[in-house]
Image (cartoon, rainbow, N blue to C red; front, side, top):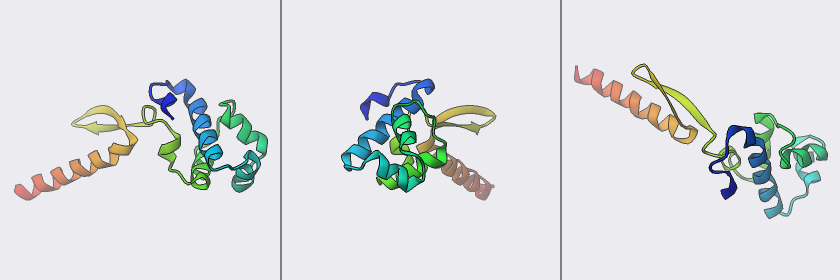
Length: 116
């Protein structure tokens, strides 16, 4: 999965496809079996693994569940960023820490109000 770390958004689906293929093969699962479990054609899995088909997020999530991994395991961290607003400035942060930052900010606001 190291091939993904510094790849741009245009290659997102290639990276996701490689990660799906790597995990599926690790589990010795056929494309047909994976396709049946998420109710798509086998060719959909083939094309997704080659980065030729852009799967919707709900299908990628279903694949992750079937393969026993998280969505974050399939999607590169360098691409999964969200914007958060702090004091009127927007910053991009990795999805996996955005909720932690929001929680810290909320606790700071509550603590600040309590101190008044």
